[in-house]
Image (cartoon, rainbow, N blue to C red):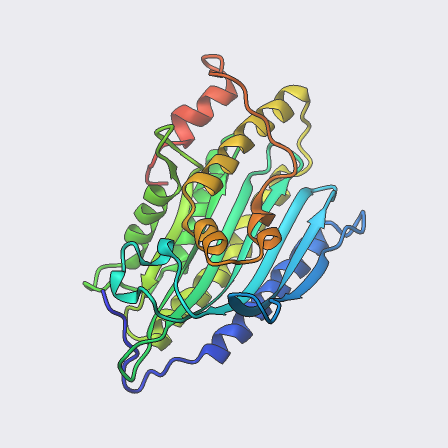
Length: 318
């Protein structure tokens, strides 16, 4: 699938960068507002690749640690360029091997303190590769997905309603509504193959997206980014003050281990960043501050922990 910028729809990388930086600020402001009572704030780490690095680029990683609501919240912006794509980016696109590229995006992961508040991940990104012809090869990607430790129907329905709303008015390359494809794409992608288990309850995921030209594809990226706070914050507000004890915390840490496994074993973004010489601290910002592994743990039948597997960690139409 070759993605070319069409006449009348030029690639505007500067507009993408402006949007991404603004989105990072909006999301950080919203999280700090939730944490306002205790004054927890993001620490901003602006970085630039050294001159002798195989990559050129810059970015800003913002991390909030030890808040009352979020044990760790990270929102990273990066804009990197390289002379050669890493293997993870060309295994399905051999025609791009050896080409220079520019990749920019926002990636965030929030690990809440209260086990009844779900972990959340979101990403919106833009990629453009050099080409031998006059027009660059480009695409958009991103999405958001939810990883609860305890399931609530109300939360799942709200999350998926917002995901569907983000896709309203957008279609696939064959003219079908975009939401069913992006929902299934998310279910298929965030799946731990070595455990035959979904990471969470899904949401949206898209990659190599260029439907309708640059302007229309960029509009989808913005819609997904703009719907993130509406999807997540009401869930946080409902669950952040629920009482919990050692049992719930222990389960949360155990399930966080699955999050680590997926990111290190299967996540293409992590592989791309590490293989291309990206900034390790920013790439691994997504890891939880604490996680645990227990041998062959099986939840007690009929328990809330068992319900998570039986009712929520299954693809379904919410």
